[in-house]
Image 1 (tube, rainbow, N blue to C red):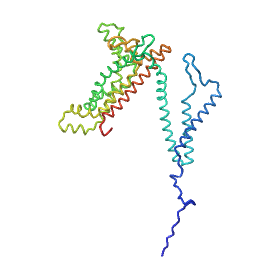
Image 2: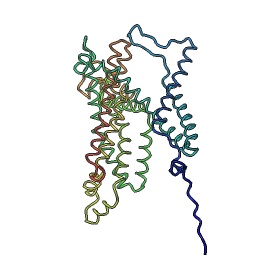
Image 3: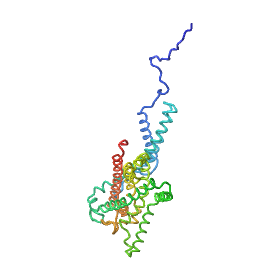
Image 4: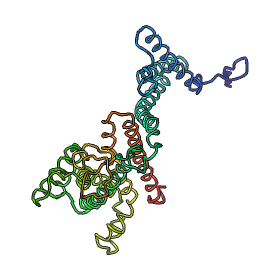
Length: 384
């Protein structure tokens, strides 16, 4: 007869079983926050000691503008804080949780810190534009007068020029870009023409913007000379639109091509099986299916070219007067307006320049928001 001896489980005096190694020690959320705050404080103290040891001033009030300028290296402070946080969180996690969790927390903190550091320039740019540009857009006559109006100069002529030039560019570029993308996806099939189009689209994607402006200027100079016109009046709004057209077409082609390729081939095959011709399949099946992506790509392409300065300076020129005619006379846009006002070097000019930059940023943000809304509205129901 055999007897089974059962080893009693180790139980502490409290009556509770010991925790496993997986849950033995874990850092709480407030631990990470405390380490983060401590890293910022320690980094700030180190920079304060360095400043006290030196002779450089910590701040200065500009006499001309009366603005306070603080001489503090925010970027270096944040970078040092991130390094201190990563080292401290790794050391504490290794002591409490073990090397495996310490490595996990270190990598997580590294990725998060990289994201935050990458967002700092963008947030700093937005904050700077809002702070410095708010005075400009709220000044009297900014949205109602042009820059030639004495006493209450504004940016109406630049806003109108931006809208006219960009609208003209969009009207021409969108059909060309989408039709080119349709050919590359639906009809090209790797033939010599599709390969040539792909090559030139790639080349145009990387072309410098100033080259587009020079191309447009030279084109209209040749047209003016051949027709016997005045070569001193080559700069016009339409020339600026053609310069932006060179930059916008490849962006529209690439975005539209990717969206059309995402349409499942099963939809095309089902349409062909019903006897629907190819052109009608494209018009009724392919394009409606990828409409959200096409519209979003077009809006992003507009946002990409609306802030170009160099091609408009060369092709459209700069002016302080209102001009509604795309085909006659120099036409200013917001990018050239900002450059022109900043070049004056006066307090009013700087105020108007910051205001124009803020308006340009708001237009770009608005286009991106509209693109998001359009994408959600036109996307298939299952993807909403």
